[in-house]
Length: 359
Image 1 (cartoon, rainbow, N blue to C red):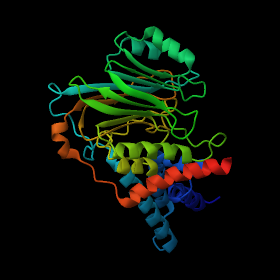
Image 2: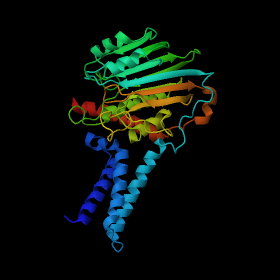
Image 3: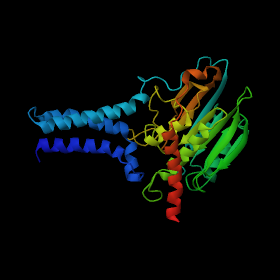
Image 4: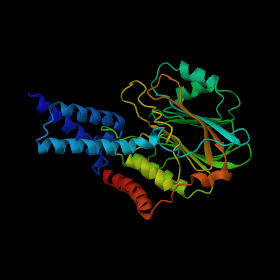
């Protein structure tokens, strides 16, 4: 095969992989292309650069391929830019972290089948975070965590399951009106609770772990998207400051997560700070941000980082936030449009229609 043919095929592959994102289907084999966006960007840049090895300046087709590659690179760069240090912060740094309420968070998908739990258990024994959220936790994980959990985590919401969707939430700060809810499936829990800060102010906390689109068990992203939209609408209708955290099984730049932000009115602290890739911890190439933290504009960031390896396929997320409502006006997001609200409600409706079709 001639080198020029190889370059044509390579360029065509890069273009097709980008165009897959525009297919309006929620099947897993389409939505999976949302995830390796950074990797596709690098691939497209390589395809563009190598294409010039045999570029014919008299060929219109060569110019057409080059223009399409450039368009793909620009499209992908626009998606990535908000998650680079070149972009402005969506949630600004704390102005007065010493004299305001602070809240520290630690979230981890533990990998239910992990055999070596020592790293996470050592972290728990020595942690000083106010709130701990663990996902993929069954009863054996719950018992192991309880055995090392410091006594000052007096507030506990535990819902262990054997299906990789168990959740455990522990807090040093008071939790009130705590509930475990099943928004789209009676085997997929989410935790809804108010949390009382040191000043006595109550905030709303949502912890979610929606199911991903998978070829065998859940071939569409409908359930995941519907759960995210239900939480987005609850956040939009909020009367209290809101924190949403957990493993969304979706990346920060997907259309679903973008709509979640637009509808909820919540802000992403990663914007302007970095990708904070948490999955896959077993691969240094195929990594992307699956574990998320979204905040209402009353909050500021003191610290945000990916935690150390815990022998899971996810890295933990760690954050220290400050509560500074008096300067909320500096980072108020736009109100969702009618079209965005309708789109969110349509995604919820699609989930119910899918359930009916499956019955």
